[in-house]
Amino acid sequence: MKPWRRRESDARTNPQSRLRTADIWPLAVLGLRGRPARAVLSAAGVALGVATMVAVLGISSSSRAQLVTEIDALGTNLLTVTPGQSFGGQSVTLPKSAPAMVARIGPVLGASAIGDVSANVYRSNYISPANTEAITIYAANTNLLSTLQGSISQGQFLNGATSHYPAVVLGAAAAAALGIDRADGSTVVWLGNQWFNVVGILQPLALAPELDRTALIGFPVAETVLHADGSPVQIYVRTNPTSVAAVQSVLAATADPAAPQDASVANPTDALTARADASAAFQSLFLALGAVALIVGGIGIANVMVIAVLERRGEIGLRRALGAERAHIGIQFVAEAALLAAIGGTSGSILGAAATATYATARHWHTVVSLPLLLAAIALALLVGATAGLYPALRASRLSPSEALRT
Amino acid sequence: MSALELDAVTKEHPGTPPVVALNSVTLTIGEGEMVAVVGPSGSGKSTLLAVAGTLERPTSGEVRIGGAAVQDLPDNKLSGVRSNQIGFVFQQYFLVPTMTTLDNVANGLLYRGIPAADRRRAAMDAIEAVGLRHRSNHRPGELSGGECQRVAIARAIVGQPTIILADEPTGSLDTATGQEILALLHELHDRDTTIVVVTHNREIADVMPRRISLRDGAIEQDSAAP
Image (tube, rainbow over all chains, first blue to last red; front, side, top):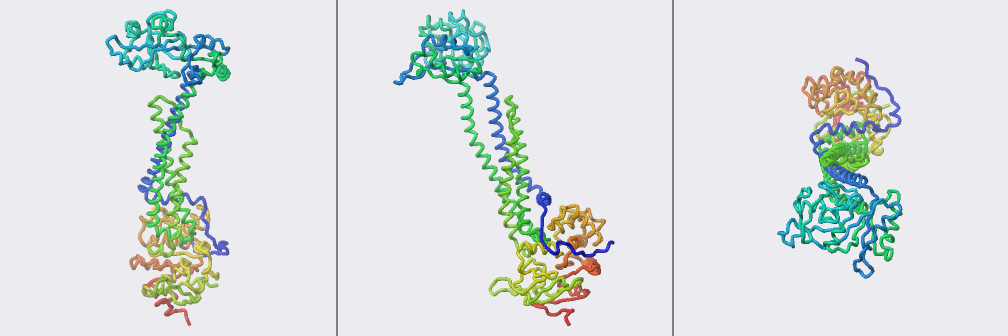
């Protein structure tokens, strides 16, 4: 055995306690390892809160990204012109020449109008006239579908020939409401007191969802058979993508030169994006729920740490005897609480990201979970944990060493 | 230079009337001395140890450790005195159950700001000094009571303190194991370590070079007194 001799050390001349930063985390880990089950349970509370928040934000950003992708695919260069209201409040109409005038604007690639038809459509002439299924009839130009970049699911869209005859193309929702799923020319509907052949059924129109519950017929047949006046109620305008703003600024004056203030111009993309943002406001409720869960998790950690301080009086006393300052004891307990919360925050982030991925995959969306979101979630959990640890740490550091040792 | 000096130290615990745990105790323990403090329960032994170890402040009087008065130092300076100059050994060992012998002993240097590798190196020396080299990687649950107390003693000496304060170090051990621990303390004493053992056990005190007996907070007898 080597001789054991005391040496004078430098520390003796200036006695001071010091806890290295590198030793703080091992201390925190040590404290949690003593009670692993309790650590897991109290971290689970924080994990739940963080997972909720990450999943809510992840799913909403995934859904928004999906919408933006869809809109971009359809093009953001579609504009609409509708008759507004006159100064007196009466509704006004656009001139019949408006679509042709608009189409002559340089960067306009295509313009297509729909017009009002005062008629209803029924599956057969035996249906009660009151049972309209809320389906609107419009007269439509033959280039409507290409202007909207929509697609047909059955049959074909109106063309130069079918526009003159009793032929109808049904929107997706209208076809479903009437119970029609075939457009091979064998199906007829009772429209404006006569039979119309169903020549086509549309896919849902992403940029013009207002047309999904309509039945579209040609302008010529609308005017001759159903006595429509042929004036447009809405003009869809597809422009050169680089000149959207320029076209938008001249559109009203071109459509209705006599009374440009009566024509209102809109970009349906804006409306769709605004709608997505509006639904995001709904998510704040779920976010608040997540925040409440996180706070409850934090209180759970505070609770567990207060119990730990009571149970570990001996350890606290020993550490004071070994030379720990009050602050060192406090730091140890804050670090333990923060570590608990960080474990909860990290597993909650992973859980939330996994929930987002599962949901997005099930809906065939791209999963959008941003790294800053995950880091912010972990940082938030860390903050909650450190705050929760403050009170227990204060209690631990205030224990008198000799009393703590008297366990 | 003396390792520990108490000069007219009085300690009262608040209450009505206040409890006088130490009543004007004056004593000097020189470097390299080995002293037993004995007395029945309630005689003030534990308070004496707490005051000498800077765990409690005296109500009045002066406490000098390694020649420097400590009774008026702020709390964090007292911590510094403990981490650098005092080694404690308790009846209950106070070992961390999830740590090995080596790490438990290295804990004795934790609040000195020494890097972990250096702490382990010093701990290994201390473990050898208490004869537990073969147990350095065992956890307290795998050790006998006597071995646990050896680990605690190694933790107390690892920082080479001015003085070791042992509070009933054999209190939880059977007689034979207690004798082994006493033999170890004697061995450390032979190598110049200053040791104060507080005990209520006369047999233990009787084998110490110097005995101080307390009664009602005052020194009743000091074998070194003229």
